[in-house]
Amino acid sequence: MAVPELKAVASDLAPSSQAHSTTVIPISSKNLKVACSACNLRELCIPLGLNPDELDQIDSVVNLRRKVKKGMLLFRSGERFASLFAIRSGFFKSYVASEDGHAQVTGFQMAGEVLGLDGISTDYHTCNAIALEDAEVCLMPFNRIEELSREILSLQRHLHKIMSREIVRENDILVLLGSMRSEARLAAFLLNLMARMHARGFSDSQLVLRMTREEIGSYLGLKLETVSRVFSKLSLDGILEVDKRNIRILRNDLLRDIVARAD
Amino acid sequence: MAVPELKAVASDLAPSSQAHSTTVIPISSKNLKVACSACNLRELCIPLGLNPDELDQIDSVVNLRRKVKKGMLLFRSGERFASLFAIRSGFFKSYVASEDGHAQVTGFQMAGEVLGLDGISTDYHTCNAIALEDAEVCLMPFNRIEELSREILSLQRHLHKIMSREIVRENDILVLLGSMRSEARLAAFLLNLMARMHARGFSDSQLVLRMTREEIGSYLGLKLETVSRVFSKLSLDGILEVDKRNIRILRNDLLRDIVARAD
DNA sequence: CGCACGGTTGACCTGTATCAAGCCGGGTGG
DNA sequence: CCACCCGGCTTGATACAGGTCAACCGTGCG
Image (cartoon, rainbow over all chains, first blue to last red; front, side, top):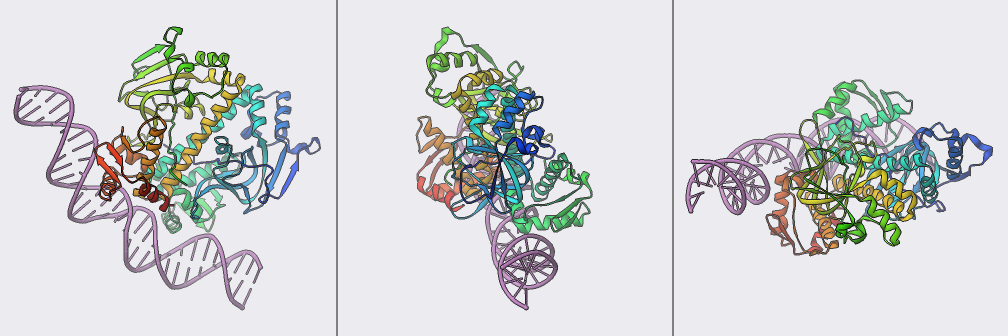
């Protein structure tokens, strides 16, 4: 398989909850620019081909935005689930923490992706989501989503596809963790990140990592030293240019080879 | 976290497809015993608290059963998705196969669990499901499910919870693969299997594995020799009694310790 | 200024993979 | 009915990828 699409979703939040976030911005008819119907990320969050009436209904669901400063939690494991979050801007990691303090990163999420799907299962979050850079999210109260998706067929379908896509993505990571070696894991990870950035209009050969080596390692089942060494090796091999968190892909083809050869 | 609930779902199928399955049994009012309303697995597949009318509607959705002989595919990657499958009896593994022949097991499924969720995403299967023992599944055409879940609120909710549960389960495996060592992986795997069997009325200390060491290894990211060695070690330590595929857990507490200590 | 954090690199250790031999039990064909 | 074979499993010897521990560097920040 090519470029496993690594996990891009995570959990959910208690909208009324305390400490983590900073500002909550009501969306009124006055700041139309944030309404879904006018959002440039629209095609990622909501289905295409809605009529104006339906778009209005969607706008009425997505009734709050929230700013999340770098390092702040969007939600944490154990909190009550009420809303899904569509990321408007910024970058998140989601992770589960064992009681002993060890944290396993389960995904990285960027603009246009949805956080919180795992909370539907039990009505409580099972993981944490933290902003890796200043971010802004749209709150989508889940009971309103369910309500509306009973009326708008394409919204129902869209919701199901988003959830299923998440299942498929995790499947891909299982393949990665179950059968690839360090170099292939990092190669697949970079290609995936790059593809997602490219789909958002960024360069397809250059990117700025938002996460530390340790976070990458946790996600890929490697130690930070190993991640660092693999970066060095790929750099030495002329496949990447690595300057701290600035990565430039020089030989996309070779990167793909590494993944393909690994199974 | 205790006993990660390992993956218990997988992909989907083209109901009209050719080779794999054996018998298709229409469900009529004559063989009521298979109708959902009378199925003893009901509480696993469909929501509780439905009124008779709603139960009738559900029965009308689940309109076919299919027998799948041991070793036969229920569906394969690339096939068109049309239905979810509820397992009535038997045991499945799901896996994704790379072009080069390598197979990564992504889950084991037993009675009462649902197969096919990953197909919703693109309308095509992304993995394969194969029966590890003679099995019988109920076909649930997905467009009918979507239709009905617009009318029956609790069905809609149930569907969403099932999908979300699958996401959470895969999260748990990520933790397992990302941070546990062989002994802890196998311990978590056994505890999970045991719990699922126990929930179905079987012993909570004894089980018969339906899969080979190699399949366990693929699932856990280990080689079959390693799986075998870990079984031997756990046996030597007096934690298990292992006779080929018959496993008896002697020290559940120690097994849990192994998982807990591993993070 | 100095400290803390993220990153790199080196030396060494270890858990798991790999390769190989052999066992057991069940199915098949002579 | 027996011999054989084959698939699944166990066990041993050895190799190696990645983990662990440690030193060091640069940079941003209090």
